[in-house]
Length: 65
Image 1 (spheres, rainbow, N blue to C red):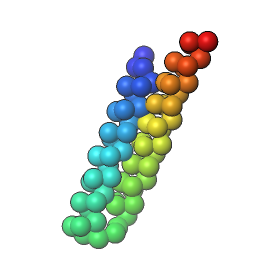
Image 2: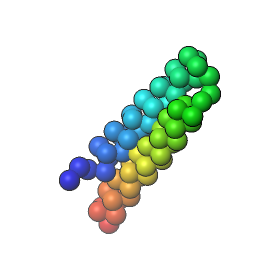
Image 3: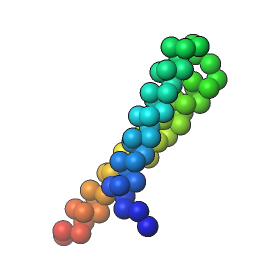
């Protein structure tokens, strides 16, 4: 099983990559369905990445107690 910190960083990187692709798509052909889909995926990836990173630090904090 992958650790939450690693999974969170990977999800954040994927969210940034999908955001970059969405920006490129808007510059090439404007706002279309594919651009909105890319932004939706980026939002979900960034949100889950941040949640996993915070979960890692909560686990680390509770293990110290």
